[in-house]
Length: 182
Image (cartoon, rainbow, N blue to C red; front, side):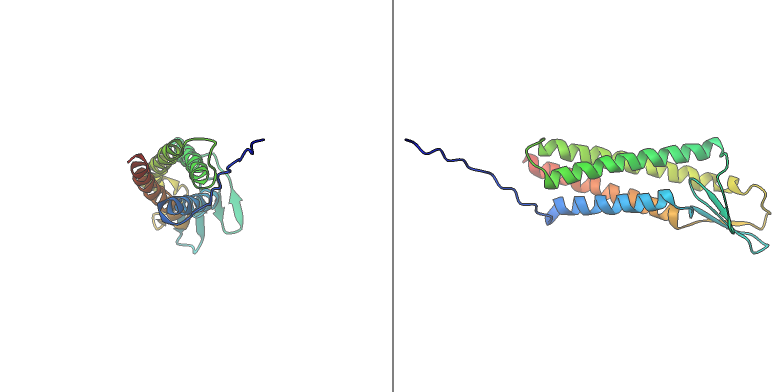
C-alpha cells in the first residue's frame, strides 16, 4: 500500500515592499476620494454680508440651509467624471486586494494590469473633473455680489490627493509588473 502525500501550498500575506505599498496607497486614495466625493467643501464663498456658502458635488450649504439645485451641464460633467474616477479607483483597489491576498483564482500579472488600468483611469477622470471645476468655479456665484471670494477648499483637495495617490499606485504597479516579468 502506498501512501499518498498531499502538499498544500500555504500562502502568507506579505504587506511589505511594493505590493503592500500598492494596497496601502489604493486604500488611502479611495478614502480620500470618498471623503471629497461625499462632502460639500469643494468651493467656499465668503460673501460681504458675512454669509458663507459651501458648494459640493451634490449639495450647496448656506448657513443652515442645504439645497440640491439643478446644475449646469459643466457641473453635471464634473459629477459624472468624478463618479467614474471613483469607480475605476474601486476596481484598482479590488485588484490590489486580490493581488496581495488571494492566489490561485487569477494570474498575478492580470491583477497588476487591472490595478494599473484602474488607477490610471481613476486619476485621469478625476483630474479632468477637477480641472473643469477649477476653471468654471466662478459660474457658481449666481446671486452673489462682485465682492464674493470663491476659493477651492478641502473636499476638492481630497479628490486631488486621491488622484495623486492613484498616479503613484500606477507607477508602483508598473514597476511590480516589470519585476514580475523578468
